[in-house]
Length: 460
Image (cartoon, rainbow, N blue to C red; front, side, top):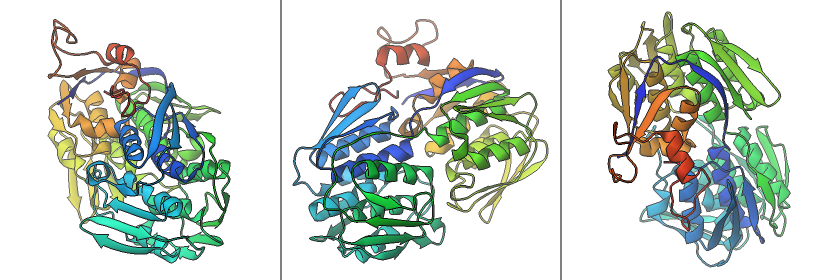
C-alpha cells in the first residue's frame, strides 16, 4: 500500500491550478448514456473514480476513448446491456447515477446498491421515489435495483429529504426526465454547481431545462439527445482543500481556475478565521501568516460550507486560538477523521453530532490512516503543520477524488513524498531514501485521465 510521508513546518508559496470537478464529471459521464452520438468531455480529473466510471460505462456497452490530455470521448456501441455490476458500483456511490439514464434510454436498468466512502447513512429512497413518479416499476432483487418503463412520463416530484436535497438523486431524476414524455418539475432540487454543470451538458445535447441553480427545475422531455462537447467546471472541493492547506501551513497561495462564486461560504469562513482572501477573475489567493482564530463551522447543502470540506476545516481549527464547534447537517456522523487527528495531538470532543475543537499550540507527527476520501485530505493538511513527520496511509481513498494532491502541494514547497514499497527498487526507488518524489513520478507517468484501455494509473 502506498503512503505519504509529510514533514511539517514548511510554509506554502506559489500558484497551483485546480483540476476539473470529480463530482461534476461522474454524473455527466453517466448521462452520456442518453446521447445518440459521441460525447466529448474535457477537463476531467485524473482520479480513480473517473477510471471506475469509465469501466462501468464500458460494461454497459459504451466505448470510452482518451483523445488527449484530460479528455474522453464516450459513445454507445452496444445498446443492449442494462446491468451495472456490483463489482464496479460498490467502489463509489456516484455509480448509481447510471440508473436514470439507463432506464430512460434503454427502458430497463439493473443497478447494484451503491458503495463508496463510509461517512454515514445515505439512502437511495428519493432516487427510487422520483423515478417511480416518472412511471418506472421498481423492485429490489438480491442487492440490485431493477427499474423498468417502456417510456417515462413527466410528473411533479419532491426530492426534499431529512438532510436536505439529494444531489445524486437530482442528477438521476433530471437526466431521466430529459427523455420522458411531457414536462417534469423537480421540487426541492439540489442547487449545487455540479448539478448546474450536468444541466448545461444535457442542454448542449438537446435537452430543455429551466431553473438550474434553484430548488425548482423544469424539464420538458424530448424524443432524443445528440452527441455534444462539454468541459467540466473546476473542482470547488479541491480548490477549497488547497486554500485550507495554505491557511494551516501558512504562506501565500493562488489557486488558478478556482471560482469564487462556488466557494462563497468557504471564503467567508476563512476570512472569519483570520486568513486574508483575495478574489480574482480566474483565481483565489489566500495569505496566512499566523495561526487561525477559532470559529464555528456548520456543513450544509450549497451554498453552505460543503460537507466535503468539513474534515479539512477540522484540521485547520485544531490549531486555532480558542474553541471551535463543528456540525455537519448533511452527514451528522461524518467524524471518523477526528480519531486520527487526535493521534496527531488535536483536542477534539464529539457529542451528539457535534465536534468541539479546542485549539492546540502545535500538532505532532504520527502514523495515521485515512478512513475516507476527505479524511485523507484532512490528515495531509494536518501533517503540513505538524512538528516532525506524519505518515498517511489509506491513499486508495485519497486517490479516488484528488488529482495528484501531493504533487500539487510539493510544487508549493511542501515537504511531501509518496512511498510505494511494492515497487521494484531497481526501477523506481530512490537509492538513498527509498521514496519516490511525486513530482518526478508524475512527470514520468503522465497526468492524463486513464481508462480501462490504458491501464496506467495517472493519479498514483
